[in-house]
Length: 309
Image 1: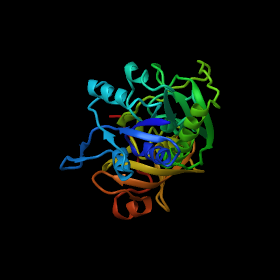
Image 2 (image 1 turned 30 degrees about the horizontal axis):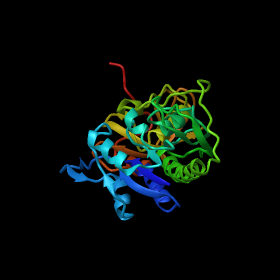
Image 3 (image 1 turned 120 degrees about the vertical axis):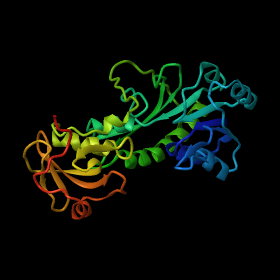
């Protein structure tokens, strides 16, 4: 089967590598253009481009999926299927090109968590299980017919970044199985219904702000879900304090109050408390919380969070 691969970030790299190692032919790889990054805004290739070049695969980098030249290039390839992982929404004219359709890898058990940030929202909501779905793209966002699904347990203190790395590998395996099944006709497609639909919209920086009125478990889930992006944070006397890791502890006190600074920073929540384990003051690298308290003026009784004027 001739397949065109479309993807950009690191999450898509295992899928490209697994596909290239399979019985299918990767006819071309489509990814975003190189973008400026860092202080010097030096152009950096997207992770999928780096992986494709290492595999010796031809790379296309259109400015937009709607670019007329991309339609002509993909039509000339005459692919049997597209494999789409973490890429832009494809216009209808591209979706019509492959004979067997376009297979998307989505890190949730659809129809749950349709949208741009399914892993993060699953952790925000305290889910203990998620999964990987492959489905055929259609004009509705994440609403196409399901091909295969695998369930995945979420570890209690797992961050979004850690879970994403695991799901990227699981998704790669599921992608190849899905293409195998489409080719030999062994897959039975399952139409999605509106029952069980939940949304996982794109996040902003403000979605990482901690509210100490929340129960401790919700605070902990916000921290792990926002790690690494958009990043959980709170305020203290020294400015903004990013929180990278936190665990639950049995303690209570005034909301947002620092209860202890031994072996981490214990902060009271609306119900219960959390221990901040890894934090990052403004303009400084991330560090263990016990290292922070040895070098910064934070003591028991101090208050975290926005204060009313």
